Length: 344
Image (tube, rainbow, N blue to C red; front, side, top):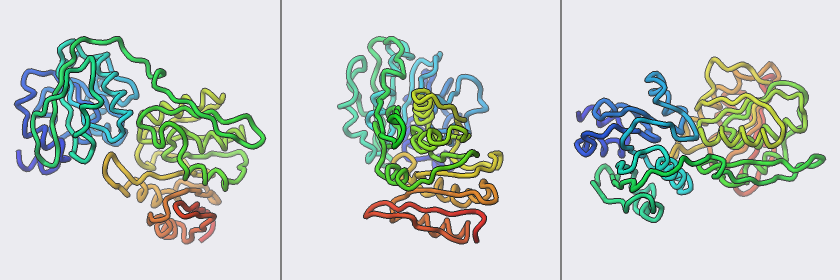
């Protein structure tokens, strides 16, 4: 058991340590970042918001889903790994109240720095006040009960719409859901990148870590013949991106992934505001893998355009991969970088 626990995140170690709490419960696991613990509990279904974390569960069958909406389930209780975004927590609580039966227990686990100390402010009717079950591994395990099952929630009720002026065109309509980067609007880094992106000709474009799809949609409206693929790790982001495309009469390929896999084709342009967090933690791995692989996913003269916080070590990684890195613009927080495959 100790060997198993050592491979888990701290909240999952706490769940495993108190596995007896879940005796008799047929569990829906919500947003779990790992899976080695699941053989110790009766997990009958799982709901994943992170494509990378879902990878270890996807072979288990239709009861295990990567989706922005809660699955219909036979589970009699649930355990929720607390996300960092409070608005997303609110959505998950409402969604779970629509799929779990009356009287169902909901365990909530999270690191103490994740905001779990103030979670009682976000749990109200139809949930009972949360009770602390245990502390440990720098984490807290809470439990509450569903007093009465609610009607299923509609994802559309949680959508926030905004507009972004686009020269020469009607305003770009953007959709966003809780948990999407920079919810409910657009981040300042992407705004800066949009000011410097060139007008592209027909070809293939990848919007990596697309969020609600602002970069790809902006370029696709300028060049309707552009074939755009939108890649993100987040189910909420991909749902928002799909709604952004619908609102603007656009089409595109949606890809759920946390990396540039070898199965992806080559693109004429890749644009991105790469992430450097996974959940609560600073995590450079997604950005590092992306920048090491981007050149191999570009056509012979394909270009990479990205924006990033200036403190991040992305220029060095771009130079290592492409042999050069052009700093197109910068301010006191962000920088826009460009690299071309054909130039060494």
